[in-house]
Length: 334
Ligand SMILES: Cc1cc2nc3c(=O)[nH]c(=O)nc-3n(C[C@H](O)[C@H](O)[C@H](O)COP(=O)(O)OP(=O)(O)OC[C@H]3O[C@@H](n4cnc5c(N)ncnc54)[C@H](O)[C@@H]3O)c2cc1C
Image (tube, rainbow, N blue to C red):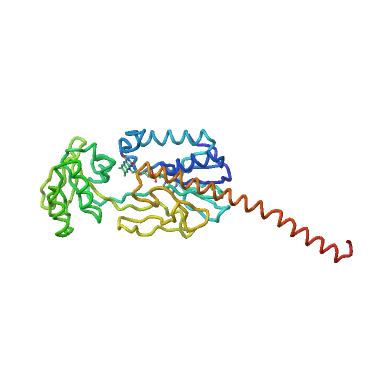
């Protein structure tokens, strides 16, 4: 269901995942007018359930967000399906243009658009993402415990991933996929019983809607029920380019994120960021918590701006009054 969108909001929340909806909830409860624009593609959409989330353990991602939308609406926030194409303007007067041609004005913007996992271009891999091609031991480890697990070397986190997954299964293979495994890393993998498989992975194969294994260059199929892959994590923030906000390389070499100050304040006054768009390692709980925290900062920022305006108003009035008195005196009317 889409709400009727008004012309102006105190806060525009771009992205309606855990971070955006949590932020919208706090802002709506703070009696702010809030619009959430959401493209409807949360990062964990392919997963069957959200794990590691206290009190909501295992809830399907879509159900969690549906409940969240109902909660923010119950406090008067509006939610609409759409994709923001660009944001222009300045604090107090931002204008967001949506792909469907709508435009919305807002005093403040909360960016909560998450990230995209750019996966290696290996045939058959992307189709299994979030099902048996996985990345996060805390999201999926319990569900795949004791399974034969393969870890594909894709970047700086791959050895770490293999070491972590060995906590859930004694059968972990590390597919070097053309990369060099340093001696120290090889030693650490060996201590955890993880064998390194040389050669390139050229395909991911499925039988009866389940992962069968990975195909190596030489043609050999190595049977695996699970493949662990670290995609390149890239913040979804192209629409901020007109404001001069662009993502920067993540310090851990795992992708690109929007760098912000503590509490989510961006380099552009009035634009705030929460969740995976800035913190690539945030799980659902952390993304939601960040949305709540940043929303409180935005509300405080608006309260302070309102106070500043109120304090400036009588001064402006008296300055004008003084000018009028002087003008009248000059004209001899006083
Ligand atoms: C396969 C998989 C499984 C996972 N499992 C778990 C788990 O079990 N437990 C856990 O805690 N975490 C899990 N995660 C991590 C979880 O997905 C993230 O922590 C969470 O999604 C971050 O929330 P977010 O609000 O920052 O971003 P998202 O949830 O990605 O929400 C961002 C929203 O913004 C929208 N959007 C993007 N661009 C625009 C735009 N221009 N205009 C409007 N809207 C836009 C998107 O469509 C999306 O709806 C998993 C991740 C993956 C990939």
